[in-house]
Length: 389
Image 1 (cartoon, rainbow, N blue to C red):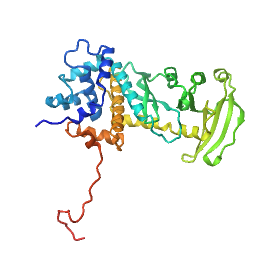
Image 2 (cartoon, rainbow, N blue to C red):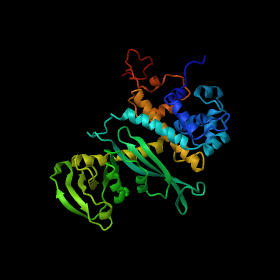
Image 3 (cartoon, rainbow, N blue to C red):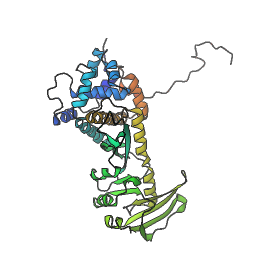
Image 4 (cartoon, one colour):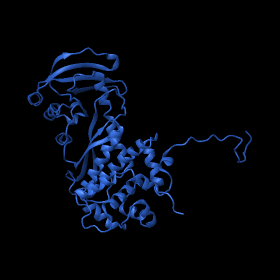
């Protein structure tokens, strides 16, 4: 007797179908499509991400032998390797990018009240980029070096919930700092960056937008100290200064005052120098803010290990971007499920459970809730003992 919904169907129910249809209509994704729609493509690619399929052949080998279950999963079109490959090549990747942004907006609202280790009322973002190596002969559009191809995933994550709020995918030759031209600064928010993003002209633009930044200073930076504040050296702070830049170019690019904070990290036994345009919050909070930047490194590590974004099902730029945005949407979807079902399990645990139970017909909340193991006592221990205790 066929009763209940599959786990895959229950997971997909967390997706706003009407918003997906809007994205499809915006880019005419289903134009002249008769059977295999954009929704069918998204479901197949989502299945591949959730189960970590390695190729189109692997996706089709798992889904094609079970046509009856495909209907209950929501996939209506006939699945074949050529059909899925053509869809990845031709369907506009912006459909899945826009839909991922819809999920990101939902997730950020769910996690907006979460703490991230600091008592800070402002929104805090961490900005960084991760390089994904590619074969230049197979991906000729992904230019990086003379004999090597790569793409860069420039990402801005909200530290409340570690939800990516902005992603820009480029070829490997684009320098990290160029992403500052693509960002729309949020007034009052903190942007935490490594010293690879030092461009004082762009940082000044960020400051004029009423946004704050925390960034590591370079060792050869030329400056003049105007004022020093008293610091508690037992906290690791070594200096809290107001400075102006004195370099020939940097003084023109950033003519306003800056805050320079020197901090000694006892864990790593290293000394760091930070720059910020915020003079209100205390110096230790700024130092701790920069320490939270490590969360974006963990985000990159997580999606590379647990989702399929290092090897691709297609070689065109459209296919690669479609796959990356689908992976991002699945990451955010798992985060939404975790929050809405009030799950204590980590995202990794949830993803592992889902990967093994997508075809099962069990309540999703029951599947993902960790139940306490009952203690086996001697009274209900039915197996005979080999040795006397």
